[in-house]
Image (cartoon, rainbow, N blue to C red; front, top):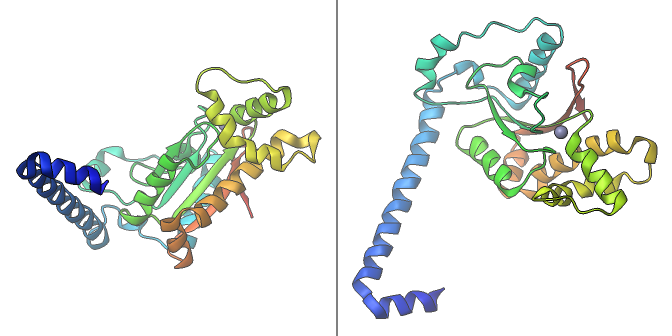
Length: 245
Ligand SMILES: [Zn+2]
């Protein structure tokens, strides 16, 4: 890297110095914007009711799921929230969910806009991009809770089980999912009758563990008890989210 920089300097020192100055300016401005965002959210959160401890955030999330299960979801007044949310955001929970169209985190926890920071990918696993997104919501938006949300009859995990069992290579980019989900399937091989259900649960717990211990920024927030990372499995028939220990 330094050798490349020296070659650039030698070729046109003034241009290289200008570029370096420009990059430095961008970095300083970016840092200032991020600090301002943190300050704005701490001093004047657009949704004061979303400033919660990790335990209170989990309680609120699960009470929302109770209402959803019972068919008692609230009427959310989107019109009157727009003004507050145009100035910022402070979601009280982040959810890493499968992309399955039957799972809708905002609905199943009976939440409104600005309440839940949702990351979705088939098989609800923590890729680098997902970890970066969660780091953002925890560090910049002060979100106190992350839930990894798996669900019954997950097609991504089922396809991965079949691919591993039959030794077939799925088309297109699907092998990316197989690689990401294989550890959960390999971990439950000993219980063949319940492979799918067990792999779904194991995939949730493995990704909870990855976020808690394998992602340094999130790990430091967990260590400081500023956030909680939990796992859940959505039951298709009842709509109930079962918390995993
Ligand atoms: Zn799924």
